[in-house]
Amino acid sequence: MPTPEEDHRAVVAATARHIQDVVSVLRELDFGDTPPAAAFDAADASDTVREEGHRAAV
Amino acid sequence: MRPYELSLTAAAREIRARRLSPVELVDSVLERAREVASLGAYVTLTADRARRSALAAERDVAHGRLRGPLHGVPMGLKDLIDVAGTATTASSRVRAGHRAPADSTVAARLTAAGAVLAGKTHTHEFAYGLTTPQTRNAHDRGRVAGGSSGGSAVAVAAGAATFALGTDTGGSIRVPAALNGVVGLKPTYGLVPRHGVTSLSWSLDHVGPITRTVEDAATVLAALVGHDPRDPASRPAPAPGHRPATDPDDLSGLRVGVPTTYYFDHVDPEVADAVRRAVDRLALRGARLVDVEIPMARYVQAVQWGLMVPEATAYHERTLRTAAGLYEDDVRVLLEAGELMSAGDHLRAQRARTLMRREWARMLRQVDVVVAPTVPLTAVPAGQTSVSWPDGTVESVSDAYVRLSAPANITGVPALTVPAGTDRAGLPIGLQVLGRPFDEATVVRVGLAHERGSA
Image (cartoon, rainbow over all chains, first blue to last red):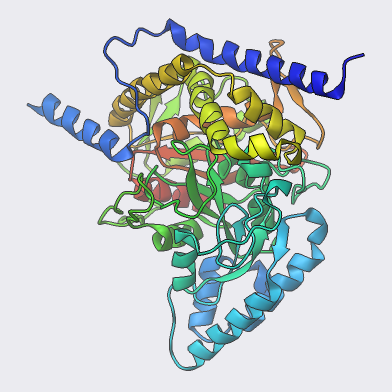
């Protein structure tokens, strides 16, 4: 019979495997030179929209 | 109508006109909170403090002094939000004996605007879950409140708070608001400072209002915004404010994006029908409906988990070493599993966020807002853990509830949920309105138009 601690570790390991399965889909993406966004900057996103709009207008 | 039933806007108007005393309002709300105590909305009701504040507010009114637009209005704060001298329990035994040394920015700003603290509301432990098991749904006690801001949504829906604050990392304002038939607004990332608010995941966390009307949400938001250097993500509020400059009854020229992918997949037909009817009513008010394809939808859950899981584990690293047994099992398992995520997976999620942000910015050049269901199904019975869809797909209840909310956390865009009728069982359905970063005014405009159309 597994101890409660062993049961707990098994649940954690199964959860970790499930999480890894979910995030593994990101390996499909071709990131090229894309840098990581360590923290999302919504102001930067607005700037991107404005800049791209400006470029499109030019 | 009894005072606790008034919307924030109506209550504030009555107080300003001296037709309602802050003491009457606060007493009515506190009495109501006791009547519905079995719903489990509150961790702590701060009744004595609320009465003292209400008396002071009443004296101010008598002398012609109004502290601000929320003068004398009672609120509930999710118990992740620091209020000086009170416990921030995070609905967790881990926080036993806690005392906040100072007010969070949002608590200080609401107090400065005149609001009165009625109490601290329950959260799913440390905001790491979508059901809030301590709290019952305001419409059916046998069903989940939704989470993680379940206490705040139930308090507002049941009349036990005139408004409340919640936090939202993957849908935790919008999900319980939708499931309890109230309004919830997740503002643009960075618009509302988070200093003094317990984090779940720094790069996805937001603070925002839960109210009974869209106008109420706009009023609370206006009191919350403004740069605070103590939150590194904080940004100045946009100059024009958050209220629409035009008549909300007229949506002429507004381009409303209707998703052709993702947001209507694996959605209960009654929910989908209610949302599509609401979209049609927006078109009757002049909005132009534009089909939009949701970019990178396949990667939403992977990005959300790849960001949130390691960030949450990092926040709890120390207490996980010293007091792991004090966490509820579901939260402890997630936190410990997060220790096993690789740096490579985390960085891929961060890089995917960069791509997703760009693609959403492109989509939001074609339309002014996107409208969609908030959650794919109404409140499930407490204890139900999974949902089966007609194509045989089985999904956990938490995954289902977070699925349509998470994109706005990853992309940072503002997202509002407004009630859109009920299903045959009488359970509330939520309509979600998503907009461009810092364009809360347009999101509010659409929310107001919907509200008026469905009233």
